Amino acid sequence: MRRETEQVVTDSGCVCGRTSRCWQSHPVRQFTRSGNRCGWWNLALSVEFLDHHFTARDSEAPVLLLWDFVSAHWTEEVGKYAENINVFLLKVPPGLTSVYQPADVAWFGPLKCRIRGKWAQFGVQQSNDHDAKSDQAPFKLLPPSRSDAVS
Image (cartoon, rainbow, N blue to C red):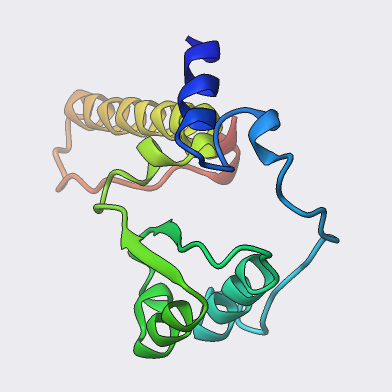
């Protein structure tokens, strides 16, 4: 299957894909680090990202960029900037980001699944403990401690 993916990507003329061979036509760039005081992705970071990754291209061919529903990706300014540098933005449907992003599929998907399972188990245990008590005070679900959440 890996070889078929490589062949399809190469034959279609794409330069990006699931294999390192497809990245050979990309210029080597220095590492970049972006940030802001509040720690949230914003309009300026969206434009900086587009500028860093897409303005120095040798080719005038359009680029399709899949982005999630973060509001900073979809401002009028970002849309105009992307259009000016020949980048077409397409929204990944809500809830499907993990399907399209390899890191989400390989790392975060299983991690989120495990955390959800632990959270459900934690809630069931609290419910069982509450039912076992004789005072029958109103049930209140409490969050797990930090050590319970990350262990």
